[in-house]
Image (spheres, rainbow, N blue to C red):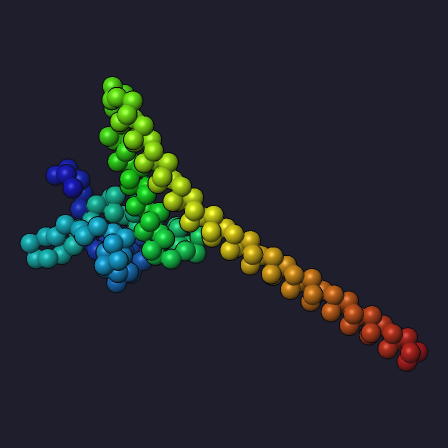
Length: 155
């Protein structure tokens, strides 16, 4: 963190991101968050980038319903892409540019594989639910027809 960057304590980060302090410590333990800087008394100090990362983790959890391991891979991949972009130099040789591009493609393929797997699982679940709804609708129509027949028979 730079001298000019504001530091946030764990409670402030928890409040801003909507997670508990325990969750932040868990993210740190699992490698989702880099270990924060610490004050002399041992208090954790977080940056705005840390806050953004926690928000991204939460968004991915909510949106994709994926494991923390997959989220870590997705977030790490984003950081690798940012690093590659920061390292890019227009004057670099073709071999270096090709190496960076190949690495970027590899990273995005890994992200894509995670999302593809989850969307396929969700599509399968959607199809199962649609089939169940069709079955229930068919049963309801059968019951309504039986009910109508019973009403006609009584009249």
